[in-house]
Length: 308
Figure: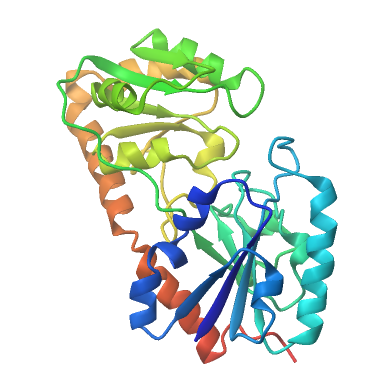
């Protein structure tokens, strides 16, 4: 299978290279799935078995979204689809606001959809049909360096997401541990060392529900305390995460101190360690290469073919 991955109007090149079909490009080639990367649709103006078009789609982000550049891309894409109707068009919903079908302007009935961190309730992702959505995630997170525990809980982040929300999370977390919401991120090495010294990592939503912080915590064997919005989306593709099994969940930041104090009691330490272990196992079980093989294999065998 020959797949064109076309990147138009996207400001973050790291998101391109961390997409699993590029990160595992060589491995996929060994499985007869060749992915070619293009920075302009005109350079890919020939038939392929399938195509993935990546365009910055977060309309709420004025720094990255350039409205005057989107219509020309749509026009060019429509012309390509008309010229090469046999190329399967894979619609890519890749932005951080994971509940919204931002790629809908590029979608036509029958297109398979690669959706980053979709809601468990696929009905929320209309107009995409629930049975056409395939979840994927960027390759994020790394194990933090081992460190003695100094804080019961910790959150260090920037004020992204709903106005004032992360400031509230930081203030409540600070009552029981380390809580900071900073406009300028601290150096990565210092950030990692501070969070490594926390028993529970508080992981609120930001621009979207999933974050590298969730994955840092899981890969480090840390217990995660996240919010209800995060609990409603498929952060680890193919796995249904559960409150009290893979992580802890709060509905309002004001609940953070009581939850941390309750789960930090010596009598609950084994239960908290089990939750941390379950989260780590779930994260480590995600095999992005195998997931891409599964997805592209479905295109080959026809299960994602457009209806006649």
